[in-house]
View 1 (cartoon, rainbow, N blue to C red):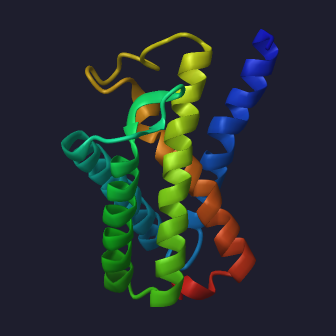
View 2: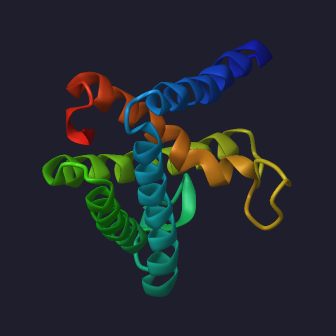
Length: 165
């Protein structure tokens, strides 16, 4: 891919989630929706790391991200879904919607994490930056969030925010 191709896709990779963030924030409960999404993503990331490191097991996507395991995937789903439901209840969101959408956030987060790993493998780099030492770069901290924001935007648009009122 050319330099301009990377630039174009990079703008979309950053721009769409940024616009999604701004659009979500304009909703009546926009701040709560963003916090709920962040809590869900963080719990999923932390749960996947801790449980995957502890239980190990078969690899999820060995050619893309050799350290990610199926136990980590399941741990991330469990932790993300649990925190998503608890925080949705705290914010007064619809339980059924939170059950489904928390799961969607977790899956988007995992996809975003794998996409970031794939892009780094494609460019033959270990870390996306050095801003946060030992953490693989800023994009490694944001990859799940960058994937979850457009998902939440799509759900809000599709349901006209019904589950978050």
